[in-house]
Amino acid sequence: MSELKILVVDDEARMRKIVKDFLVAKDYTVLEAGNGEEALDIMYDNNNKIDLVILDIMMPKMDGWETCREIRKISKVPIIMLTAKGDETDELLGYDLGIDEYITKPFSPKILVARIDAILRRANKLNEEDIIKAGELEINKTSHVVKVSGKEVELSFKEFELLCYFAENKGIALSREKILNSVWNYDYFGDARTIDTHVKKIRSKLGKCGEYIKTIWGMGYKFEVDE
View 1 (cartoon, rainbow, N blue to C red):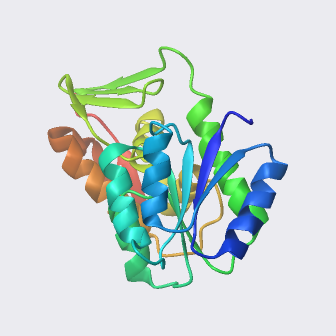
View 2: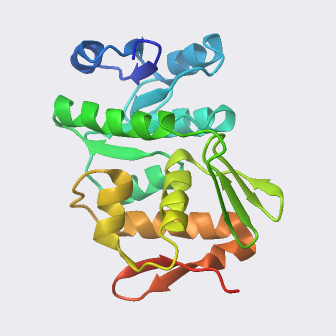
């Protein structure tokens, strides 16, 4: 696993060391940045070949929000946001910016590593020519490319995962709890609006194909293509 690079961005050296120690124990290669500006420099120096970013919010020079916005301009790399604030508005803002996980401090380093493992495992187990087609929608799981009527659509890592999950379970009614446990890969005790936020963004990006994601009021969603 040593070829996989994880960038840990936090102004607290102690926090970086704790996270790094747990990741190095799992044979990940860890790069460190004390603020957003350093993080972007590392991204550029590595030609964007970073496999995952762990990003703190409260930092000097450039906070996590602005850093996330800048990273998203150049990369679809999975981002896990760390914060000392458990505010729901902050969490939803993070997902709006395209992050993949949101973890509130204090947290268990073992749980953090488990979530990292899950994200990277799903990102690296894709097989060649693994393509899902549904109506005017085409999802290439190998290259992480989504096309609507032949035109490529930009999705964040988590949006892509959620869309794949819907398409792979075509015609099946999926509760929010099942979606959270399957796509986020852990028991999620936060607000289910996390899913609703992602679905809203996916629908907007897919245009007419966004109608394939049907809302089941009081339960969740179902992916269905009208023939």
